[in-house]
Length: 268
Ligand code: GLU
Image (tube, rainbow, N blue to C red):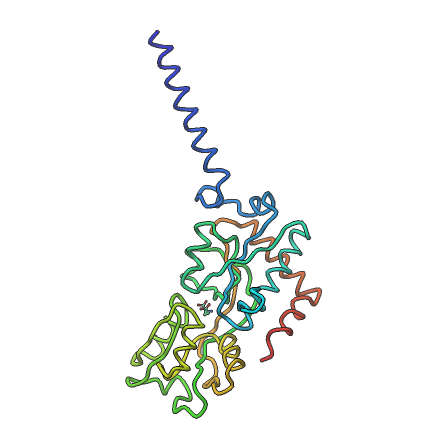
């Protein structure tokens, strides 16, 4: 009798453990399924890319169509087609510089293609593909501004940057005297610059060119003062997905498709 009771108890415990584990397996947002994002994409026939909605040329939401457009979007679509064929649908979810790592790690997006620099610090949290674009940090000012380079950023100047960006960290190192004001995204930071709330806006030259194109009364000054190699980020441990993305990136480069996409968006 005692033995039977014990057996029943053990069986119950194992059954409960099995139910718990099964519950973890199918849930995209659970940490346990993180190891195989690639398999989940194939199963769902859907890949979710985290992209910017505030960054002209790379990822910008077109208010008249509701579509998000730019280099990162076209590259994501081409990569998805290269890896999965037409069978898997590409979806796009907004990320900002501040939210992109969190949204990747909680499973809301499968890959981040969002002007994201590969850094040693970020490699502790996510895995990156090979470099897919080379940018460098610069400054955007109103034409005729007294600020012409990073050397002009002194105690009495205000520089605008975006939360969670490398630009915001770098500028504090390179111009320690200046005041840095941080915004949630690039649309807000540029609006603040236009409203005269700062003397310069700092981020990658590639992003600043988009702003200067939108409003030609602004210009880039002083060249670049950092290197910002962009990579696609995936949740840590997804080596197979990184390999697939790298293979696809290489074949897009070999076929000329990568250049075609780049030439469509990047003129500088
Ligand atoms: N590439 C820089 C970064 O990854 C600046 C652009 C951005 O904020 O996305 O932080």
